[in-house]
Length: 88
Length: 44
Length: 369
Image (cartoon, rainbow over all chains, first blue to last red; front, top):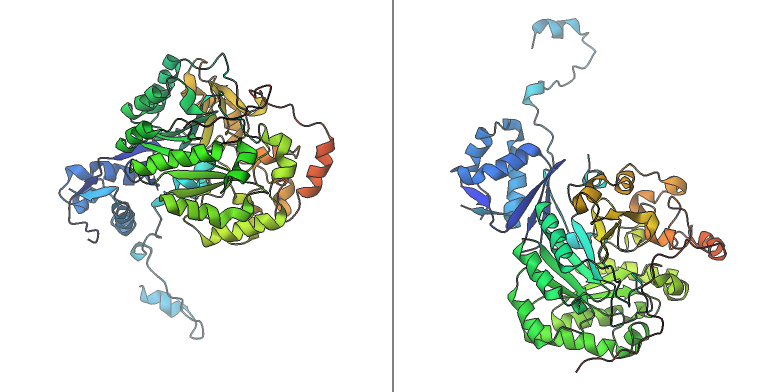
């Protein structure tokens, strides 16, 4: 299923997120994959996903500039593709 | 665009395509990158 | 900033933390990187080890690579593995297989947080046992059989590439296929007891090229990024292609000393000890050695070489133990820049060896039934 910013997503239970100077490291204890999340506001969005009915509202709530939404969407889609994000 | 800008240029000069700064898309950044943990030296 | 730059500048915690639980070992592999054999009387106690795990959990280190010596012969090994799992620290451990019987294999199959790597150095008993001791190949295969019988799933088979086994690449792949295991090939470094046999055992230049091509053709074979010096031959090999010592990885040894990586168990690369005030976290975040390593490094003599971006000057441990300056070329530099330096350095005094935990006499290994 294609990533859809009008759906609700959340971080997979088995993913650990660790803050780093550049943003965060995300590790999935199930599939052992590792992702670098390279923007602090993207980390904030990821952590807030479970509280929003849509990704779109998480973006708005975090004050993400509309010009960055495509990059953010691409980033979240790649996390979903490796099972780091699941449909809520 | 101000009509006077065009008027100031000579007829032979090409007018460069000017993109208004706020219509430019922010350059696409790669915000999530996957790294293989098995691709890391430090285990024997 | 690039991802490499992000990593080189230092992370809140290592991504790959290797922890040698004991110097005791029931084998006496010729090239052992930690010169293992005898237990050190000052090894961390069970509670000290638990305190390290508590710290690792607090730092959110995702998993530890446990090795040794032979970690399974530490009496509290299984307890410490359980302790890690109970504290959200994944475990990947490396073993010769001698304690992986049917029951152990079944226990391992139940846990989703513990991965296992079996070490062999030949695709047949003759090649393997020459380096690891009589019966060691049979023992390793028995462990693999137990894991397969217990439906463990994908375990790893880890091989150190030497002059004697480079010709067996396809056979290693076949062995891994037979067990549904992941094959992992790593670089032989002149570390520990490896220093004594490096000149005879390290792969020749044509062998390195053959290995490089074989790896390019098989991106599913893991290398632990240990062959990034070969990336100077052409397309980069999969992996980070950089040395992460002190930046992305480090090692905790059986007595709690923290080193930049498992291949430099030497005072010059010792950052501190987990028993010092502030524990492991303080060493990782504030030691002088690691701060130095996280500064931008000079390319030195390699700066004028067109391949430096690909190979990053190679492996620090390989240079150190062959007497080459750290900003010089790798001893196995694919353009041959290291060769003459190794020959010259061989006659000069080698750096004093790190602590040697080898047994005084070679042990004839008796495999369990």
